[in-house]
Image (tube, helix red, strand yellow):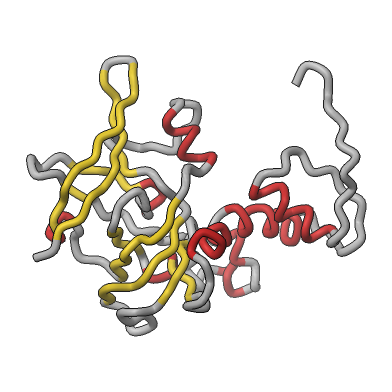
Length: 214
């Protein structure tokens, strides 16, 4: 049986603490796709969880990381096989509800992110952030949370597609109905803002204005 490490966050009194825990494969219960994680990052939602400023965490302790890329090592789903290079999506749509059937998957009523719990040696359950928990050498996700990518793609670049690009581009495309060449105001130019800007056009106006007091 293999072993792997995970970084988990916990609350101790009024402080947050990060711990590195050795886990074995039995800590990953049955699910769809097991991934050898090659890349993850501290997402804005991870930062909100650490700062306790948003209800991202349902239960402590948690394994953070909602952006990720890696290689499939095992799969119980026919669409995926060991060796597939994938990125992780923070939202897995059902494909069956009326929103999905209308081609508006962004309004899916029945997303099915994995809800597996990794467990420490003492039996303590670790909640995976948004059903991903990519701050680990391995994770287990729902099949719908995987998207295959070119094996030659750099994990650090491809992994951004799963959250920042999907959120920014999706907001501009599906919610804002932004058309190429439209003039738009983008508040913040991180991964999400930059992706929204890309939808508006390939030219960036570098004249930035700063609102007093912000």
